[in-house]
Length: 136
Image (tube, rainbow, N blue to C red):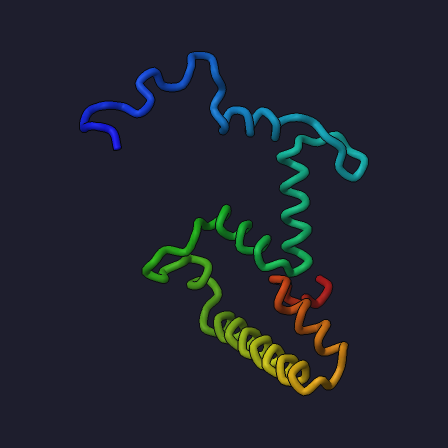
């Protein structure tokens, strides 16, 4: 522990040395190829994130929504939740209930040794954050 009023790094960052944020932004502004087009790495990451979200990847969806609407506040007064309305929240709750029930069924099948397919489905369900979508 440093004595009160004494810096652990009295000289600070050397002049002219780039910050991590600056280096990261420079790298993300570099050009790369995506689907035959020259785009920045930042643009390519955006395309990939949106594609994963459209495939039903919950982590990607959460990241996109957090970037657009901000992360949910601790009081629960999130604009996204409010915009869903009672019907939307009910549908999400129903989906979560169905997924939990399917996971329970798969765990029971695995314990009783019913089928390798159930074991594989349970493993996939446990390892991913993907919700099946209707192909929209």
